[in-house]
Image 1 (spheres, rainbow, N blue to C red):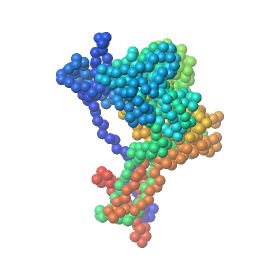
Image 2 (cartoon, rainbow, N blue to C red):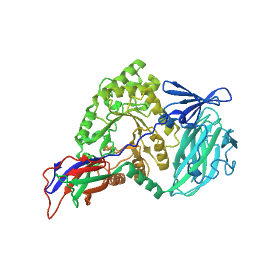
Image 3 (tube, helix red, strand yellow):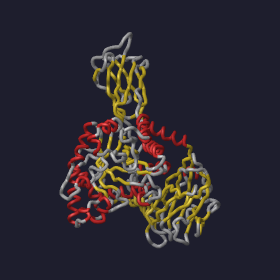
Image 4 (cartoon, one colour):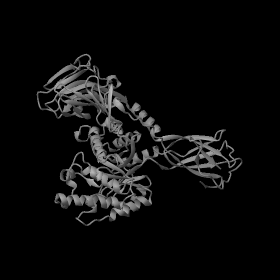
Length: 621
């Protein structure tokens, strides 16, 4: 505490959220069921509720012999259940199917038909569950079961369906044919032997009829469908949900009690609270141009609390020529960020895209490349150890595999382990694109991302502080799908960041606002970085300002949101019990106390703010 102006006492308080208790699910209620099929092989069915009689403890696993002769393998499923949510029977459709009639096919194939050549039929499982099966006679991915619906322009639709295939694995994409376009609503890897939930959504540009299809690359396989749901929401309903979750996840009611040095409560005392620094990291990429441009420096530092260097830490920037490392710009940018209290994300240690490898790297032998990658990781992580808040350890390795192809499939896991050994306190990210942006990209669906994420985490034996990095390079965003994807990824129970947000579209500002609002309102999202580093010759895909650092419409959106995500100065008076309450965004706030019985009371000293009963901050004046 320190005194302020005459009659004014100042204090600082930190408003933080509370982590909810996590319930661990153990035993056979969340389990792997090993079920013997008719062909004599064992099928693995996950997340099914099973019961029984004989249990054998085996190294933290419980193997249960069921009365029907099947086996139940159970363990702590709090993480793995989100990776393989594959059930013996599908759950009921969300929202009772919404506007989808006959969503569980209890009335046969009524209102459903085949799109293109093929056969549609209803089947019934041994437990009595009815579902739809489509088999194709051609090799066209869009040949599938079809359902006609009416979609409205001003609505946002959540979509879900349960899918299975009769053999192996099949990537399945939900597609709506509307307004002359094919709109992807979500994707899943369907499996044989159990049902997987596809969760997504969509919105449309024009009101009119639409046709639901299921696209699959497994054109020779049967696709089974059940429990389909399509639920509309108005824009007001969607925004209301955002507002509610922001209040729950980003804000907290703070209770202040003002007393004098003798402990006497001070009613009718004026108190003001001003946010000094928000706790939610919201930032923008920067380039080396910021080092010599004061206008760029002012514009950036007056807005953001975190940054990523666009290129300056990448391998092709720090070691363009083999053996000649150059960290000049990266060092200077780290120093600049520290000077202005800006947190830095390290981007990136390795980029798996072959087109971004230097010629000298691509020409190395196995042994030489192994040495070079080890040297690269040790060099950059050691140099900035303890100075950064995150490392993008491996970039885009759901789409590319340059290093894995040459050094083995364990390359990514080894990189995470080595980075953690050098810089153990820093979050290590798996950074990827199209997980939020493109529902139709089967390489990086939320399920595929989680599969890769847990593969690395298992390899590292949970020794690394891992986090989820979603690049978020959008063209036209699908906001309902974005929410569904974040919901699924949130099951990993690790921080999620949008790491490189930009939009390339004529409605750039409007879409940017929609994306940022959706991300900020999701409780699992712990930080956002916009990908709009300034270059004199122009930005990459999106700029926030012109070359004189006057805001473009996208910059105005950012300023509007920053203002909305930071509490205005709150002024009020304590009640008869000396209490004042205010709802504040999480962050560091300056508190000023004024007393004016006929004039201002000069406060010479103020004690440190303490937590009284755990809910009330006690301010002594």
